[in-house]
Length: 259
Ligand code: SF4
Image (tube, rainbow, N blue to C red):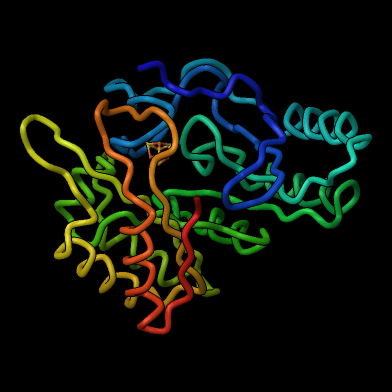
């Protein structure tokens, strides 16, 4: 299946399930993916075995110029932009100038779109860098990915590269200075004759244990919406997502479903 790769540095605006009318910033190269995870459900396709940045990463100046141009183009529209979201063809925090780019984006937002939120979607694998944590503290909303409650499910569903473990990731999210927002993907499928299913009751129970440990401000759960890297994955029903969300709510955790 053809991966859904962004072909622009600034994409959209799109109507996002989570962020309203959103302008996206893709810090990774256009038309190729770069990530330190290899999630089976990734819309950008598989992370290549030789995981090198292909193509040129946009500079802070190019990004901000493109952002200003897009905002000005959009300013005649009758509906406003609700958010500017760092997402795109991989993990945004991997850009070597991530910190500078976020600061410049915040300044641009303050001048041109003061009511819009700046949002970063991250897999949390770069939280060992204090400069990344420092700049993430400045954005309006930062969403950390936690799809699994066990190391084995983490390895199977997110396929992290290098020595990234679930517990290390959780410990780093826990040391984030403000209560974090967690986003979790639920999905199932069969890979090499083995079922992967993070909605199985034992997996959900372990995942909830980790959520309790993190003490998040909010948990947003969702399921696949577009073709995935691994073919044949199943969308989880709204009923199943509601059930998972209710389990969190019954523990006093603010949970919602993005549909
Ligand atoms: S972290 Fe995001 S970009 Fe990276 S593989 Fe997973 S879904 Fe894709």
